Structures are given as structure tokens and as C-alpha cells.
Image 1 (tube, one colour):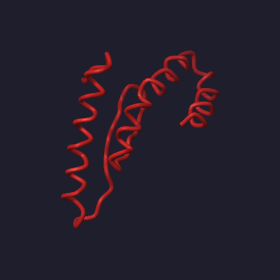
Image 2: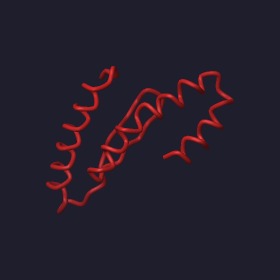
Image 3: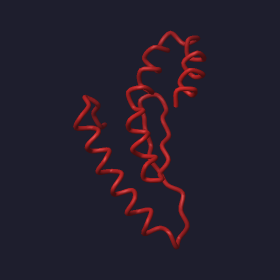
Length: 86
């Protein structure tokens, strides 16, 4: 994660809002770790975060269970931070 941030923050310096962008990635790093613990994927773009899973039909029930557990962790993270849902 640190290497990712170093590379992307250097690239974002071309953007006047680079500080805000880097802070967003740092602020949501704990969330990314929680999502990864459940074997799910997370995509971040601007102020949008999407959580998803790749699965087969046979593994769909397991993926749904992992997603439900992940949402519980996301709720815990949201309650501990001033970030809101929209």
C-alpha cells in the first residue's frame, strides 16, 4: 500500500487537489484492508468506493456470506469515522 501511495501521490501532484486525493487514499486504507480480509475487491475513484467479488455459480453462497460479513465491517468502520454514505 505504501508503494502504491508513493507512486500515485507523486503523480497526483500535477493536480491542484493532490493533497485531498492522497488523504482520501490514506483515510480509506483501513477500509481496503477490511475488504481484502474477506477476499473481496474494492475500487476507489474520486469519492466513490465500490466493493465487489468475483465468483463462480457454485461458490455464490460463500461469496454472499463473505459480502455480508464485509458489510458488517464496513458499517463498523463508518461508525468510527466521520465519513458518510450517499
